[in-house]
Image 1 (cartoon, rainbow, N blue to C red):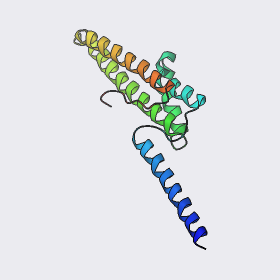
Image 2: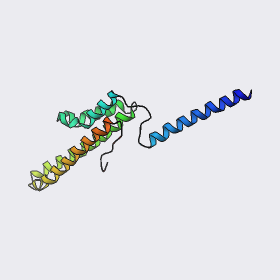
Image 3: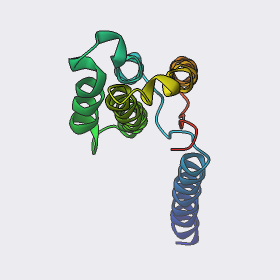
Image 4: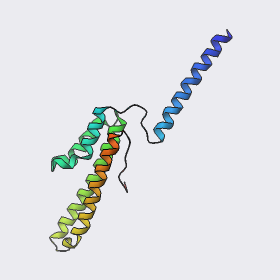
Amino acid sequence: MHTKFNACIIVMYNDAVLKLQQHSLKMKGRFSMPIEGKQKALALAAHIGYLFFGVGYIVIPLVIYLCFDGKDEFVAQHAKQALMAQAIFGVISAVVLALTFLVVGVLLWPALFILGAIWFCCSIYACFKVINGQEYHYPLL
């Protein structure tokens, strides 16, 4: 009787420890499940969607995020970060373009160029993080 009770306690303890370890890994920014190639490819597509110009700029990360929001935490998190960064850069670019018609925007072109270079470097760095199966947050997001 005591052996069955002890075995049951040990199984419950091991299960609790495993859940706690998975939770602590998740809280450290790591994902509890191993990241597969398909997940990495989708996250990469979200980060480099701007290479597809026009439609791909916002639509690719948006579609990926909407499709994987409750299903895959790794892909959804990367798609959300890429979507926010690309949307913010798109709005800033649109404002500078509108101000260009007032001639004031021409003065902002160097700042927009620098911001674009920083955004491009961050997206490339995000791709390296995806390849390594790690999460990434764009600066100031």
